[in-house]
Length: 105
Image 1 (cartoon, rainbow, N blue to C red):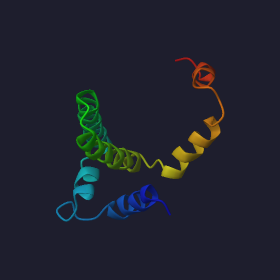
Image 2: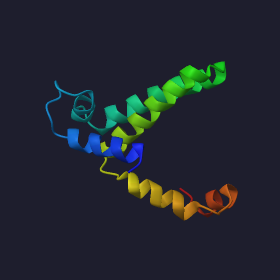
Image 3: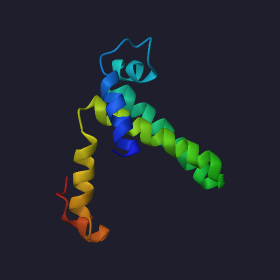
Protein backbone atom coordinates (compact mmCIF):
# COMPACT_ATOMS: atom_id res chain seq x y z
CA UNK A 1 0.00 0.00 0.00
CA UNK A 2 1.09 3.55 -0.68
CA UNK A 3 1.37 6.26 1.93
CA UNK A 4 -1.76 7.89 0.52
CA UNK A 5 -3.68 4.61 0.77
CA UNK A 6 -2.48 4.18 4.35
CA UNK A 7 -3.57 7.71 5.20
CA UNK A 8 -6.95 7.25 3.51
CA UNK A 9 -7.46 4.03 5.49
CA UNK A 10 -6.63 5.80 8.75
CA UNK A 11 -9.10 8.57 7.92
CA UNK A 12 -11.80 5.97 7.23
CA UNK A 13 -11.04 4.31 10.58
CA UNK A 14 -11.54 7.63 12.36
CA UNK A 15 -15.02 8.19 10.90
CA UNK A 16 -17.53 8.10 13.71
CA UNK A 17 -14.96 7.96 16.49
CA UNK A 18 -14.89 10.41 19.39
CA UNK A 19 -14.13 13.90 18.02
CA UNK A 20 -12.21 14.67 21.21
CA UNK A 21 -9.78 11.85 20.49
CA UNK A 22 -8.82 12.69 16.90
CA UNK A 23 -8.37 15.78 14.72
CA UNK A 24 -9.68 13.75 11.78
CA UNK A 25 -12.80 12.69 13.70
CA UNK A 26 -13.31 16.30 14.79
CA UNK A 27 -13.14 17.56 11.19
CA UNK A 28 -15.45 14.84 9.91
CA UNK A 29 -17.96 15.47 12.72
CA UNK A 30 -18.31 19.06 11.49
CA UNK A 31 -19.58 17.87 8.11
CA UNK A 32 -18.44 17.91 4.50
CA UNK A 33 -18.75 21.67 4.15
CA UNK A 34 -16.28 22.31 6.99
CA UNK A 35 -13.93 19.68 5.54
CA UNK A 36 -14.09 21.46 2.18
CA UNK A 37 -13.47 24.83 3.83
CA UNK A 38 -10.39 23.48 5.63
CA UNK A 39 -9.09 21.96 2.38
CA UNK A 40 -9.47 25.36 0.72
CA UNK A 41 -7.57 27.09 3.52
CA UNK A 42 -4.71 24.62 3.21
CA UNK A 43 -4.63 24.97 -0.58
CA UNK A 44 -4.32 28.74 -0.24
CA UNK A 45 -1.47 28.31 2.25
CA UNK A 46 0.30 26.03 -0.24
CA UNK A 47 -0.19 28.59 -3.01
CA UNK A 48 1.32 31.31 -0.83
CA UNK A 49 4.41 29.19 -0.12
CA UNK A 50 4.74 28.30 -3.82
CA UNK A 51 4.72 31.99 -4.71
CA UNK A 52 7.25 32.77 -1.98
CA UNK A 53 9.50 29.98 -3.20
CA UNK A 54 10.09 28.40 0.21
CA UNK A 55 10.52 24.71 -0.69
CA UNK A 56 10.46 23.45 2.90
CA UNK A 57 7.26 25.30 3.79
CA UNK A 58 5.67 24.36 0.46
CA UNK A 59 6.46 20.70 1.14
CA UNK A 60 4.81 20.94 4.55
CA UNK A 61 1.76 22.75 3.18
CA UNK A 62 1.48 20.24 0.31
CA UNK A 63 1.30 17.43 2.87
CA UNK A 64 -1.48 19.35 4.65
CA UNK A 65 -3.31 19.75 1.32
CA UNK A 66 -3.15 16.02 0.59
CA UNK A 67 -4.36 15.14 4.09
CA UNK A 68 -7.26 17.59 3.95
CA UNK A 69 -8.16 16.47 0.42
CA UNK A 70 -8.47 12.91 1.71
CA UNK A 71 -10.61 14.08 4.64
CA UNK A 72 -12.86 16.02 2.26
CA UNK A 73 -13.20 12.97 0.00
CA UNK A 74 -14.01 10.76 3.00
CA UNK A 75 -16.64 13.23 4.16
CA UNK A 76 -18.42 12.69 0.83
CA UNK A 77 -17.69 8.94 0.65
CA UNK A 78 -15.41 9.26 -2.38
CA UNK A 79 -12.76 6.54 -2.33
CA UNK A 80 -9.15 7.34 -3.14
CA UNK A 81 -9.18 4.44 -5.60
CA UNK A 82 -12.01 6.17 -7.47
CA UNK A 83 -9.80 9.24 -7.86
CA UNK A 84 -6.91 7.04 -9.02
CA UNK A 85 -9.24 5.34 -11.52
CA UNK A 86 -10.22 8.73 -12.92
CA UNK A 87 -6.57 9.70 -13.25
CA UNK A 88 -5.85 6.40 -15.02
CA UNK A 89 -8.77 7.02 -17.40
CA UNK A 90 -7.25 10.39 -18.31
CA UNK A 91 -3.72 9.07 -18.72
CA UNK A 92 -2.37 9.42 -22.24
CA UNK A 93 -4.97 12.03 -23.12
CA UNK A 94 -3.99 15.61 -23.76
CA UNK A 95 -5.19 17.85 -20.94
CA UNK A 96 -6.67 20.19 -23.51
CA UNK A 97 -8.55 17.35 -25.24
CA UNK A 98 -9.71 15.88 -21.93
CA UNK A 99 -11.06 19.21 -20.71
CA UNK A 100 -12.81 19.82 -24.04
CA UNK A 101 -14.55 16.43 -23.76
CA UNK A 102 -16.19 17.27 -20.44
CA UNK A 103 -19.90 18.05 -20.47
CA UNK A 104 -20.61 21.75 -20.52
CA UNK A 105 -22.51 23.12 -17.58
